[in-house]
Image (cartoon, rainbow, N blue to C red):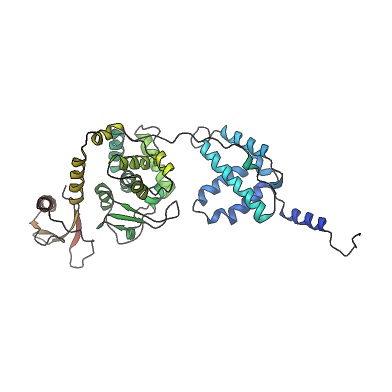
Length: 392
C-alpha cells in the first residue's frame, strides 16, 4: 500500500528528529554544563574539564559519530600531554575523570536527548591509577612551615595549616568554616555540607582550639577570609620559599589521618567518622603509618597513652573576664568563681592566672573530680572583655 501525499512518512519524521538533535561534542558539552554540571558540587572543576575536552579534536566530532577509536586516541593524547601548571604529564586520574565525564555525556545523549545510540567510552581501557601518595610531612618540615606561617602578614595562614594537620579537614571545608558552627565549649566543629554531600562533626584537639582562638572569637560569620585560589597561591609560595619539594596541601590531610591511626585509640570506623570517608578502601589509601610510632603499641605502653589522653582532656583553655581601670587590673575566671588575680600589668596578671588555672585543674584531676566544661564566651557591656586562658 503506497502512502498518500497527505500521510506522514515515518522514516522522514525520524530523520527530522535526528537532524534536530544532532550536534557536535562541543555543543553537547555546553548543553551538559548548563543543565547537568551546574547542579553538582564540583561544578567549578567539571567546567574546567569540559573546556579542556571541547578544545581537542574530539570536540569537533558529531556526538553520534564518535567511535571507541576516537576516545582511545583522546585518552592516549591526554596521557602524553604536559600540563601547563605542573610542567609534568597529565596524571592518569585526571584522564579517568575526563573519560567519566564523557561517558556520562554519552549516556545522557542516548537516554534524554536522543542525540546518539552508543557510548563508545564504555568499551575502552581506562588508565590505571598509580599507587596512592605516601608523602608524609616530616617533623622538621612541619616546624619550619608553621614558624614561617606564624610570621606571615595574613595571620589566617598559620591557623589554616594547623587545622589541616590536627583535624584532617579538606581545604574547602576549612575555608568554608563558620563561627556559628564552631563550639569551643564542647570542642566540636560542625560541617553542614561536605564533598560527599553529607554533614560531619569534627572533634577539635587542643592545638586546633588554639588555632581558632588566636584569630579572635566572633559570634558568627566566616572564620577565614581566604578564597580558594588565594590560599593555594599563598601555600605554593610558602613551601617554595622554604625549599620544600613535593608537598601538597592535601598531604596534610593524609598526615592527619595517619596520625589518628597511630594514636592506637581509634578504630577504622571512628577515623572514617572524623575524616568523612565512606569507602574503607579509599581510607586505606590515605594511611601510611610510621613504624616508629607503632613501637609503643608493641611494647604495651597503652596505659601511658591513656594517661596522656586523660591529662590532655582535662587541661583545656577557660574563658576569663578582664576588668581594668586607671590603677588596677583584675582577671577572674567565669567557671571558677574563687579564682581571680589582681595586678597592674596585664602580662603579669595573665601569667599568674595561667599558673592558678593549671594548679586548680591538676588538683581536680588528683582528687578524681571532674572539671566544669568551659562556658561559651559572651559579650559584656560593663567595660569587661573576655579572654581565653590556656593553663599551658
